[in-house]
Amino acid sequence: MPTTPPALDWSGDRAALVAPPMAASPIPTFRRKWPVAVAVLILGIVFANLYMLNVGVFPPVDFLVYRYGSASFWSGDDVYAGNVFGEYLPDGLPFVYTPFAAALLTFTSAFPTHIAFTVWTIACVATVPWIIGLCLPRSLSKRLGIWIGLVVLSCCTSIISQHLVWGQINLFLAVLCLADFFRHANSRWTRFVPQGMLIGVAAGIKLTPGIFIPYLLITRQWRMAFSAVAGFAGTVAIGAILFPAMSGTYWLSCVWHLSSKVDLGTQFASAGNSSIQGAAAALGEWAIPASKVLVVIVAILCLMSAAAVFRSGQPMAAVLTVGLTATLISPVSWVHHWVYLIPALIVLWFRGKTKTRIFVAVAVLVLVLQGTFLGEYILRSGSVWLAPLGILLRESLILTSVAAIGMFFAQRRADPRLLLFPAEEALESGYSPPSIRGGYA
Image (cartoon, rainbow, N blue to C red):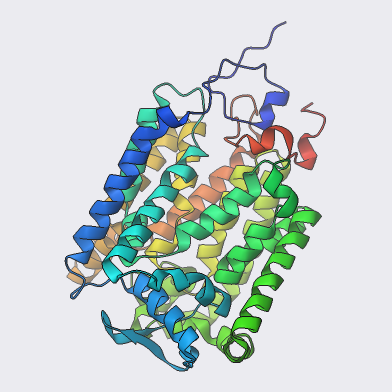
């Protein structure tokens, strides 16, 4: 009997091994992508210029830390001894990134501040449609319009909007990791830059992406794991060659005290720090030791969950699970660190049924309404009746991420023909999880 084709055809999905091919929409050509490019340009300029109008009052502090910190490295200053300062950063903030990151971020000081920040913001916005494009089925009706709509909606969430106005780097790191997992294994540049290398480079800029290395080991992706370690080691070596003294300071001393520098004093227990340890700190200092034990348990459970999802033939869900885990277990996870939550919600929406879509819709509404800070406001109001709502909103990023990880795990046993994986063309020929080689039973 002929097999009924799936409702949606995900680009490059491994489920194509068991489902008959559909008349999927081709990858949008440049001519069809120009509306996305225009949207990116407009959003980038708007975000940059609106914020730069108030640069003296609310400066994009993260971008300025990159700018002034990298310049201080080349000047021979002991950057890790204290804060970095500049024209728009008179009070100073710590530079907590690696020496390699300082070298890489040198270009941020190549232009005047306003121009450099505008270019940086446009580049950040450009990563959003790229990430969203990985999560949309190619045969989706009116795909281009939905794509642009999701880009605009994503930029309105607390995660992306704060990322843009502060000038953060996390979207670029997410692109490096996602591109490494889902790029074409037989492309020309893959021959020179093996899969896994970009993950190592991302970890060499900021340590958080290093969580993908134990994931690669658990799932027995040995070559990618080796390449990731090699890439990371290469960044350490480059930093040591360029800044030997600062490299010694960072790797022998500073790296062990990063959380105490990142939390900015009393901000560790604030609503902005949406990590497990941050939530525990809000309860009181007595809860912090127990939270560290909980973090270890959560890390193990989530990595095991990601491995199970990977073995079921859903590598995108597995990678997103690991990305969400990184922000859960990190001592400090500001709102703009949760960049993997956006693609996770998109994947859940297109995979899920009514209840899952209701969950996603509520989660997006909370993100647009700046739920974490709204929850903090409700709790500070002193209303006993609204306190439960305030707690749910304040810790909404943690709760939403845990729920998303649980849903990915629950969906691993679903019929792959109905829950087709939104992978890229890289998976069409180069990538094949062990559990799906040879097809499904």
